[in-house]
Length: 544
Image (cartoon, rainbow, N blue to C red):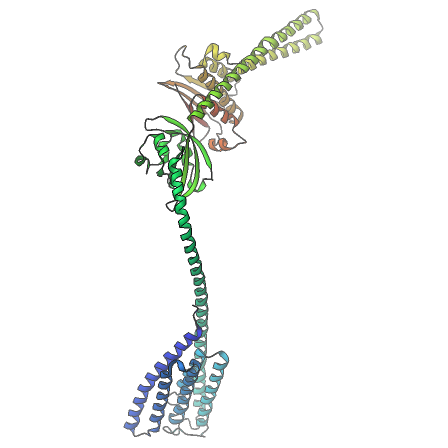
């Protein structure tokens, strides 16, 4: 309920009545004792006692008398006390206190016009009565002669009264305005709280209704969670597994109790952990999909497709990850990719053979005819022209051989991976624009499988081409290392480098890089990009 200003004023008036009645009774008793002891007339004591009884009766009347009437009674009683005190005692006892108190009560309770009227009347009463003393019109009963012909003192006391009255008006007026403002603010706050309370009740009713629906949804979700053919885990903001279904338990071959509490990244191969670390909970978009490899209890690598989304689990923001085993799909993709690569190599070989067998002899014949023509003509101009023509044909033949070598994998088939790469490296080093340092630990006549050699050769050609075209460097390092059951490729340059993840995620860029990853997937190769201060560095691991 709003706070009522009227009720607050009623409370103030009742408290003033209580205080004045109690203090008035005590003061009346003291005055009676004083007057008897001094032999003064008793009418003053009787008058004070009568006023005190009047105030007590008003107080006892309680709610039957309106608070404004009570206020008028207080104002009149104190004004009468002030006038009586002036007439009996003169101004020696500072009778203006009564007038100031009546003005203060009027300011607190009444509106501005009423309180102003009371202040003016009480002030005029005080000024007129004291003026009558000052101009010797009347004398005080107890202090005759006070202020008689003392007009300067009268003016001083009037000025003091008005000064104190001004202070009371300012202080009480400001207090009243502050009080009214506080009441208004409290009412507004109370109104706002009531609105919040009503809204809260509605929310509670809605929440109760939703809880019933959520209970039903939780049952359906639990059934779907447990019976899904895909693995499902729920992780908290730190990536720790809080819930896991039976499918993921069977896929990883770990007990459910072991999975719970561990980080999801702990069950992902080292090279794919960076994908997990990028998945900050506030940056995940709905239906974010990643392909990565998980590791079973036996150490088996399993390719999976993971779908991430944000949910609230146990009243906390969490990550729901749906994990699908894509081994069969990957096997089919690899078979298809093998077929595509083989078809591509066959087509390259056919095209190279056509260039070499068809176009090469034709250009050689042209060269032969031109040489014969030069032997028959001795004119210097024709000889220069013919020499230029022969030089052009020679360049064409060299270009055709270069294209044939690049397109065809016959170097790999005839000479092996190391010799094929060495041949390409030698051609680059002869240009004096780039230096390629090539090292390996292959034994003589050691050969890898045909698919691995083709993929390695094409990947290195793509990397070398990218370094020459984009890196702005002048040095390339290539290391091919054979370990037990593992083939490692180390590649680096001293160029400007680039943001691997940014280029990979940009659909408009990184076509060559995506081709490299696609080729490596066909032989189960793992590429790891290493961030360095300058240049570009990566490693590739291929299981043998």
